[in-house]
Amino acid sequence: MATRRILTDGDEILRKISRPVNEIDKRTKTLLDDMAETMYKNEGVGLAAPQVGVLRRIVVIDIGEGLLELINPEIVQTEGSKIDVEGCLSIPGKRGTVERPTKVVVNALNRKGKAIQVTGERLLAVALCHELDHLDGILYTDKMIEDVTDKEDKNQ
Ligand code: NI
Image 1 (spheres, rainbow, N blue to C red):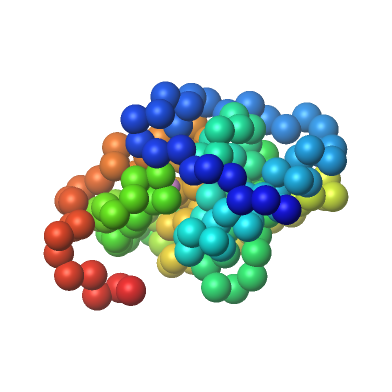
Image 2 (image 1 turned 45 degrees about the vertical axis):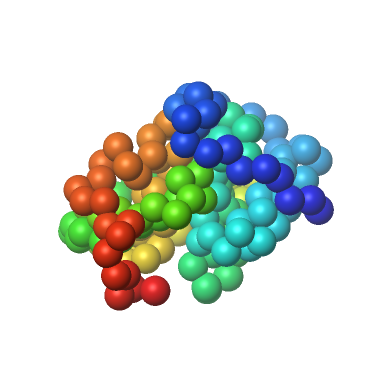
């Protein structure tokens, strides 16, 4: 495993649409391992492949409940809405509020190519929406209601 360099806002790769994974091979598994290591090292709760310069539809998430590895994830259901604070490893040092669903259901493949379904509520719903947006070249700041970088954060 190895950590990879995280691209930061301004890099045009972050604005591109990622392609689906057609075959889960050794490189895909190495990428998943490296993405998890990079996320943990940087104390993030999620990371999308384009953030490490790979335009493939792959995300890793861990909100403190274990590692989720999602290949070709798609949101199939959403419920509710809530405004909460988000940050992003590609936009270091900044935070802002975004409106997201309170619950999302995501279909994806795991690293074995098995179809899985993840239901996320609250923080996991936010993380899923945020990371999946990266696969379409969208950053949270595109949807930001208010920049709260300089305000006290009561959530963490
Ligand atoms: Ni992000």
